[in-house]
Image (cartoon, rainbow, N blue to C red; front, top):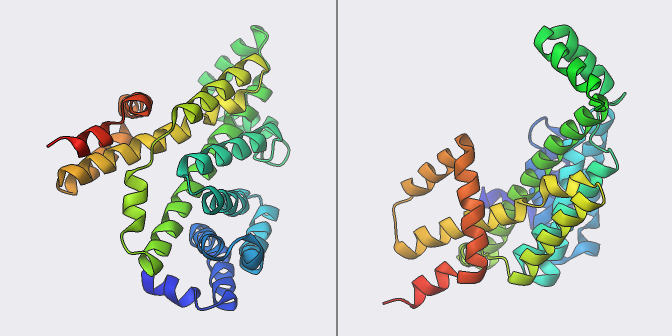
Length: 283
């Protein structure tokens, strides 16, 4: 896809056209978001505004049709690109994206029209077991509609945040391929949370629990997960291992919850131990 990125980077009109067409096509919004992020990374926010608007307009139309994911992904990846361009730290960009995605949950942006009530009613009608479970939860004093709304918003926000991270990685790899070959691989392999950044995530999680802001707790682990994925990439790169190891790793990551917990724990430890640094210094 690098030739496509090269063509779009010939100027703002090319990038705007590519972003608009991509975002208007169903299930191709990620490409438009990546183009907007690429232009933002290369030229900054102000020069990239025409490209961002070109991507946001068709994404906004999808919002009017009931799909908020394209527009939220475009806006989130642009924000993360701005932070990454200014700070040159993936970790800070990930934390910023997590905070904004959590704010979107609290603002109920991801709730379907009419709230979670119609969804619950469909579930009750479609499954007697679910209807009985919801009735039992209601008898216990739980607000099932609020719980369902939080679950819907949390899952949607997680999809949007992961999509934005993927689009940002794609845009950064395009930027490296066009202007700094090999730069993205080196940058991503070195991604690691600093102790103060890990402390920020822990504080955010605690505040979410204390202040009854569950959105923070639902997403605060995502930067740590990305850092763990980068650790695996860096370890395999340093060892010169076959790329099939990455395929196996992603298969396990997608299909098994214990693998996700292992990656999170390893990334947590790596914050203080720096496995890649020790491996690079070893003979």
